[in-house]
Image (cartoon, rainbow over all chains, first blue to last red; front, side, top):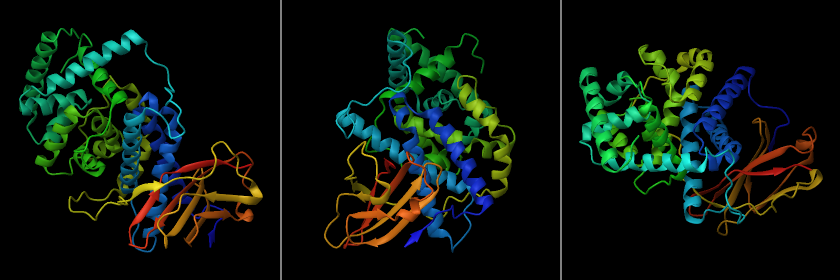
Amino acid sequence: MDIHSEPQTAPEAHDDYTELRAELARAIHSICPRWLASRADDLLQVALLRIFELRRRSEQERELSPFYLKRVAYSALVDEIRRLERRRESSLETEDGEELPLASPSPGPEREQAGKEIGGGIRDCLATLLRQRKLAVTLYLQDVSVVEAARLLGWDLKHTRNLVYRGLGDLRRCLTAKGLHP
Amino acid sequence: MKDEDGTAARWRQAFAGLSEQAAPRPDCPDPDRIWAAAIAEAPPAERHEIFDHIASCASCAAAFRLARGLSQERSSQQDGQVEPFPASQPRWRRWGAALAAVAAVLALAVLIPRWNRPEPYRGGESREIQSQIPDEAPLPRGQAVLRWTAGPPGSQYEVRVLTRDGREIAVESGLTEAHYQIPPPALSDVPAGTVLYWQVKALRPDGKNLGSKTFSVRLK
């Protein structure tokens, strides 16, 4: 039996853990859809448990960098969010039969509906763009700077900027044709 | 790329808002592949494939934003020319600034990116084990028994119990029954009302693992 009444980590490791925990909590808070907000704490625990287990398994083998642990936590988080999304899609209920709550305030029904329409329109219009423009505009819509998009896409900056510019023009025309006026 | 009338900000917000109704698809890439694309570790063709996917998948688009947020400090440290978080997501920007000090520490310990790195820890487990503890029922301190649905006959179980702040309360492996009592000494200094988080893993006779989600229960 392996029962611990005190944390088993060294002080430095505990500091790493505290920082990682705080960072993950902020990340979850930032991306969590409203319907998942009440589960943010559970999501955090899932990620941390994955890290604990990995650390325990590799104790005798190698030191794991904080960045690697963050990556492991990320995978656990996305897996768990996907699991909840699937469950929500299939039942729109919790395991206990209750309707999943919207834990944070809605922006208002009209604004929300307009956002949904534009969001859906953007998604549909992206599918019609030339592939290179689609990739560049997708990153732009993901808040990736043009400089960073060029790096991620492996293209030069001028070419990437041109693709974003033209792609945004295509997107605007497509949305307008759908009757959406962003 | 100027956005004087705020159109791009609204589009970004609307695009991100699709995650409210998102559902993963069968062709969604593994999270580790999204991470590798977000930090430009994956080869360009692989990155293009991921970006193509997130154009039409709100679930993976959100996962990509999460990967960017979590890895951002590292990228900034690496090339020194990445623009700060764009204005349409001020929360990320604040977050990035607050973590600048953490980034400095992390940068010292970052592994050199290797596409062919060791297999990431993914577990490969299905989640079929369910808690058998009644919801909302506090766990008696002197008889803190965790129960779960049993695996196939011959399964062995491993249980791990933690507090919210990550303190390990108990770990027990080699269990042959689908229940485990947390020894009272392990709970002696845990305040009443503390929420315990626990997970079970079952090693089946066929060698496959079954994992549980993380359950929580309040200590009486």
